[in-house]
Image (cartoon, rainbow over all chains, first blue to last red; front, side, top):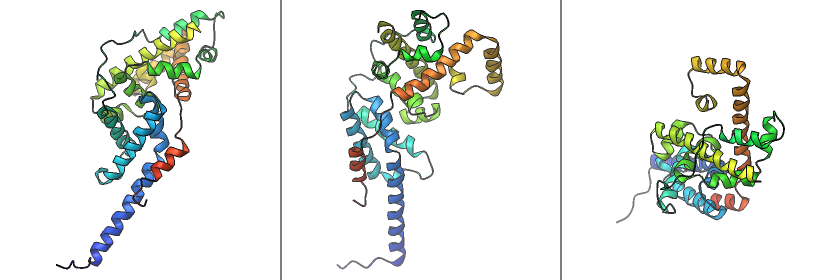
Length: 196
Length: 64
């Protein structure tokens, strides 16, 4: 049975589709640094982050037609990424059994302030006690359920609604996990900063 | 304060909060610390994609 040649309309359609696909891929690739930045803070090593990002883009490119043009591509990509991260089963549990200590909102501020000789230290000097490594390590200690939200909102700069969409949880849960995640982070920072 | 920092309060509440910060040096100091801490966390944890990975991703394109 011989195949009939594609019609002019069909050829046009295919060309348009190819253009759309290329355009989609270009837009997605432009976001790769932002996607990586978030991925790096969600997992424990650079290698893991790179694998995760690569797998994310492979999947994104395969299912490109599922993305609605004009909607939030960055959130769409991060959703693929967070789902892949969960699927990988690198999470032993979804919710931590033992949550690290969490103190009040001003704990870090109060601790840092009390360790400084100066009566009225300014904020810059207080923060100087926290080196880059200290912050990275402290963030890694936050249990992943809280850390996911913390990383998306405070580092990825997503809104509560976007974070809720990405993680497929209610906005209320985003808010409470964010608040608690921040408190745990501050407690971890305080522990490291004051012992230095 | 968390919601004020996240800019999710209603305009009326924002005004109230701002008024309070003007009058209360203790809260104002803590507020400014929070702002700086958030910026600092963002900066301190910043890591960029490697050129190698960027190239690998480009290789995934439909145009090969």
